[in-house]
Image (cartoon, rainbow, N blue to C red; front, side):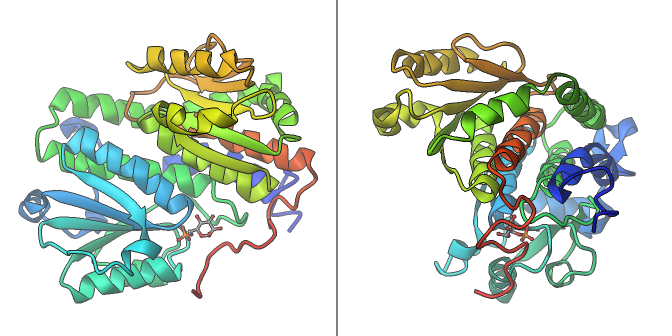
Length: 367
Ligand code: G6P
């Protein structure tokens, strides 16, 4: 295994570093600059069929679910279709209303997660159209669905998903672009997303290189690691980024982490905030930046330590992990990278079994 890990101490570090290439492969041959759209041959769907859908429901487990939440926002933003994501494990047991004009998307890195597969089968039994966003070619879910998008992110060995998470968000951006350009997304907005997607690999490279040079994220992780609990907050796209960030920390460092919508803080978790509870805040430089700054002021007033992830130094944060700016719809991809590294370095600092965390499996094939 040492050789497969190359220069890296862990598969997780290798897979974080592979993200520029993984995303290049997800994008490969799928961007159509001439029409400012995405070409997705694997969907097996003509324009008339694709236009008939009025809603999108996304199903997955764990990080696939959180990637699906970002996917739902991309579809709402770019295609202006109502979209939501939920855990496949819940969906399959709640006798959901299945409508013919809803497009269902099953998300799974492995293509073997039993709850996601069962949700697909239940949907198909009710006549629904289900597509997959899957990494492993020829896997059970990939074979079961009626078409879809392969990530081509390459094998992911570490239990905690990293490159499959960001590649999934990119695949959703392609799907959203594709659906959007058949509807109301203008050629210029389509072109903006095409260019934004093409720039992502280089921008991720930049985040990884900056960290190699400065070690800022590793330093922030060393400070966070001894905490009993860490709060992750964000608004809108930043909230799903926070959820995945908290998930990474929990999985590999065993440090308790909870993600909360920043504006909901005052309805509960603020009672916990103080010097003992650090907050990781996802603060992109968007139209909600000011609101985020005032939330951070609330936390600082209670002497809560703050690590921010954003596009420039954030006032009120002890440290800011700065990432390059993308298009607002695509920012979550870049904002997720420092949170992966933060969890990784915290787990290393605590001497955890980074690639094989206790009690967890890479894919859960039994209930
Ligand atoms: C397990 C893994 C997670 C993964 C989830 C869904 O819980 O530990 O990292 O996100 O399964 O896996 P899938 O292969 O369906 O994406």
